[in-house]
Length: 266
Image (tube, rainbow, N blue to C red; front, side, top):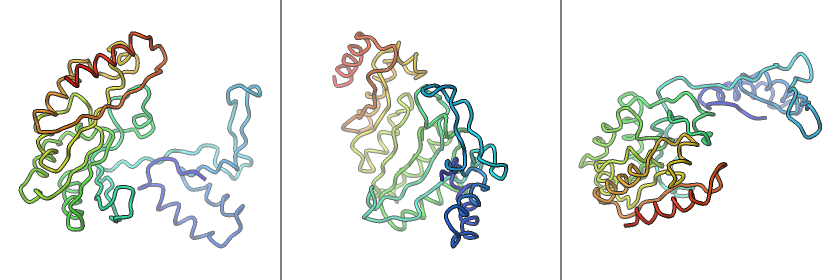
């Protein structure tokens, strides 16, 4: 079975439904759970195709008791997630994670993080995010800010000011990849003072033409400016996310990426 959508909405309903049939046989469990909104049980649907190697013609429930449509569940609130467990045995040891935003407003054409998790939502500062940070830092002095585009939180400057307070001088801060044209000297300064050496930006390609194809709304000068701001703020390194093999790519686009890398290094 597959839960479609946000866990805040779907997981409580799933647990309630499962408790009612936890001792039943597997077939009974799956049929019961298929009634939970957003829960897709593939074995209870028949898939037909236009031809053996062609597109799907229909996905239909095997009988009338199974919902014909499975609707993705979407959390509409502005209280986003934070770690409930902090342990040295985690993939990122002893770090308290706070979700700053969910989804992304940029809609780059290759990015499932945008399209599958819409709409773009931001954490409420006073009611959710800042209290979560305080709570987490009672347990650990490592903090992680999560989201596909955290610097596009409308109050991100306030978040930086809060984390930049002297009482957090011993905190090590980690952040997810940030949108290139939102890299500021202030951001780099706060990161460098919070034991972070580098920042990660997603540029995809050094070719303006290719970035237009994939709806990456950046130009090369903005990428260079991000490097300037990162350096001026005290960061020592820059990590770039990029792709090669984008449909429509030509040799000169690859060459443009190499030229951009040399420019940024300089």
